[in-house]
Picture 1 (cartoon, helix red, strand yellow):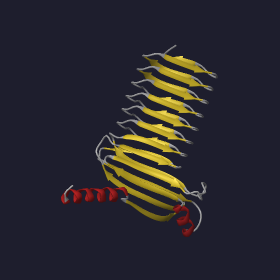
Picture 2: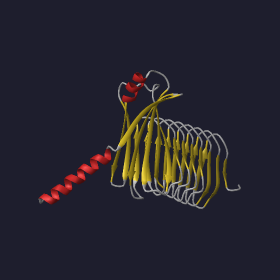
Picture 3: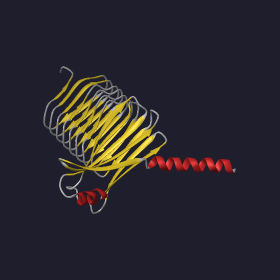
Picture 4: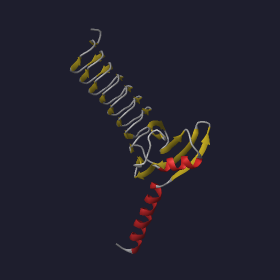
Length: 254
């Protein structure tokens, strides 16, 4: 490798490193306590993927026609002094990183972290043609209209997803799931809550241990299971397997 190529590679590595840490942090006091805001903006092309891997925190995804990913992560503390807030906020590390057209957000708590002290709220704006892979160990997930594939998992909270054009996977250990119309397939599972799915073009799998299931017009096969609630499917073009231990099953007008 000649000297010019080595210089180009070195410049590229520096640019990637700077881009991975391009975030601003600001702390302020409000009527509700202290807030530390972490912001970052990345330029991407449509078709990339946002990955969120969080030890805890709620997630809200908004979309726009711009080719940017705009990140806002807020740490909140309701009580205490400014010094106590700073020390508490230091127990939660927030990282943002861009690799090509993909952006990753990480929220990691220290082993000294006290869950009842700090709350986390993430708001991320992505291009309307983008993919999502979201995982949080505690908090709700709310996603706007999107042209892309979605994986959303939370250990404790509800999941709300608007209209999509890709496949959707939604899992929660304790909360309801609501998914708007999608041109792909849907896999939805919760251990404690209802499931509501709009019209779908692909296959649908909906499973809950405690709640009702409603599915709109499904062009593919439908698999629905609940141990405590009714199952209502407006219409289905493919095969239907629906069972409940505590409620009624209705497909179409029957």
